[in-house]
Length: 358
Image (cartoon, rainbow, N blue to C red):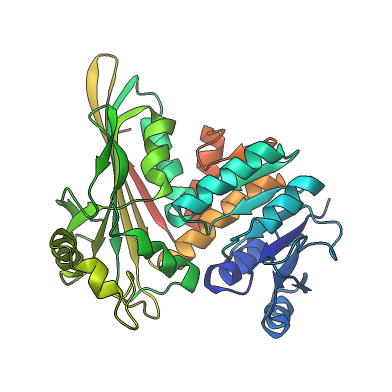
């Protein structure tokens, strides 16, 4: 049976790549490119084949009221008022969102819990649409205890990103709560500097960063300690930012015209993206050290799009790890078959995933 999938914001930097991947891996699927800019939506739809434009505005109540027969919806734009989520829940349409920051994701989860949707509502605004979080879950599989999980990210300053992704950097200067030494503790922004060797061979300093993964890495894997750290491929921008925060000058700098927390990275036309995930634990009374590396030659937006495709498969019942009704996160309902599917998508899209110590 042909699925009809709506991509809200489907002509954006990530959304357009998701649309192309969906057409490539599921050519029988009917794709609706949703948004307010009809010209852009129509142009993309025309290039995909079995696709059409769908004019909609998520800032208004019932943005899908003119659309029928929707089997799943993926949201690739900031939904500040949850109109799309609420309508999907009311109509029993599976929903997936990759664009929420920490506070907005908490609000979405709370809304979904209160709405009691009869279809899955997957919130996957984790790093790269939750793909690395699923890899981390695979690393902890079979361990009786998990002491530590670290996800280290090497961001290339020439990589491209959309405005919604860029806005995620606005909270980099704020402290947050993380699992440290078996307890939830307040940690400072860009703290606990470490040096990590990435799959390309680059050795770079990385610093704590707040993402949804910080919470779910600890909870989904039963880890006593979990961190996400960010580093840049060159320069010392993060180290400088850390020093300015300690001196109390960063907030004043951000008030200057044209400044933003993402200004230090200056997004470009595209570059690779690298991730290292390390897990320490025990099995059978013996210590275990496991490691995964991800090298995405086409960059972070492509890696995010592949993760989003996997998430769409899960909510639309197009793959081996379908989700049931209700609010869900990337690690919800983890299965080895689901991980194998994500791995297969990575391989098909030229993303190198390597597991060590398993």
